[in-house]
Amino acid sequence: MAWVPESCTLPKEGQSLRVAEFDALFAEALVRVERPTPVRARLVLGTAAEPAARELAARETSCCSFFTFAFEHDETGRLLMDVAVPEMHVPVLDALVDRAAGART
Image (cartoon, rainbow, N blue to C red; front, side, top):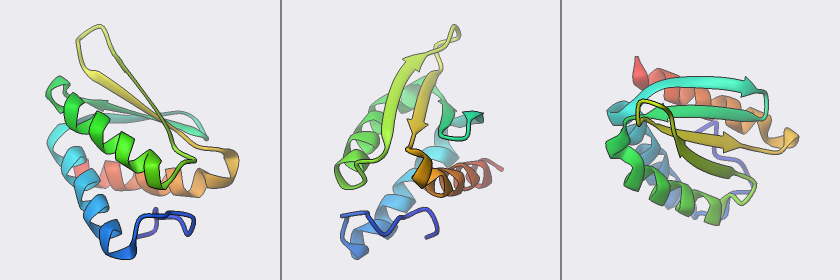
């Protein structure tokens, strides 16, 4: 699990379940991934995924506090889930983006 950093406080047995939750979100709802800056990714999701995406983001920040999640809607109603990290955690964001893109294909 390349994108789970050492600093994650989620117990090891829970990490694979969390990755599976992100994989399911990506597979079911991801429309596209954008990368406006190296420290920020935007996941464009179907509107119906909003409750699950918000709940998953809240749980993720509780164990990996370096993540910052922000949500808004685009003009079509799709959910924009911005994920930002400090510079030192860009490799974690890179791995998350790669995983999202892989789940979508």
